[in-house]
Length: 305
Image 1: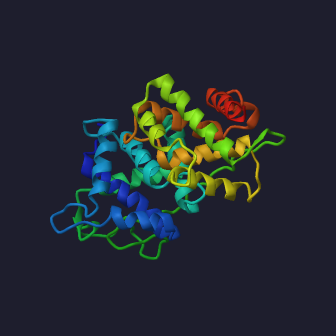
Image 2: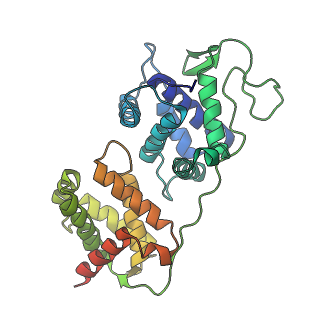
Image 3: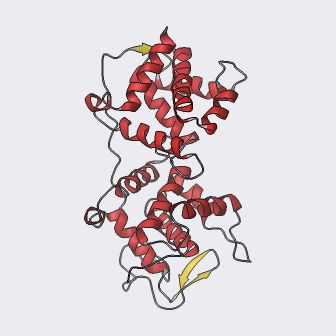
């Protein structure tokens, strides 16, 4: 009979899964997040209610019923999409973990079983669902016995889920290209707004419509423009022009932070975020064939007129 996890078991599995990578690496982004993920009050509720609410949203989006092991992993994907973005500002182990989780969710069952990240997830689930494991203080502990039979073995933590034995594989570098058109700061921001407006009109998307109404003006009073301006300066190394692929990768990072692929956003925004992320990792000769790149190119040329 296939194992099923309720919402709390699934959450604890995720907590221990992430925690195992923190103790294996002391990764800063994981450490910051786990301060909120693992801190419980005396009445058994999370201190950070926003984390609890988001997890409920992600869990329920996958299925309202108890989850299979893979369904819970899909909820974990939504969680890391929200809190451990695949951007340069996220420390390496966290970013690699998010990338690996996303890729595993697209694999066949046979392929998943070969992946160390998936194997560690299954181990976390099995540990949490062990009847001898019970919540105590801030994390679940074994009531008796040890998490590993040999205290001298790497990863041993008495009565706790073991430290991850294998860190997530490094995220591949994003392929760049040469001899591309270039745009300046204001053109790049107009291109972003044109790009978003295309999808807002096409999908009649209320989330993007509201965003555009608030943030489309080039002004020092517009915080989104100021963020874009700072990012443009860093990516261009303070040059006046930036090639359109690097500007597209700025859009990619923008979506990672503001419109990640999870249930806190509309279906069409999630789909767009995913398509941008996938296109970004393609070789450029394949990237230019994607619909999302073609729409970006139209938005750029509109901004250049």
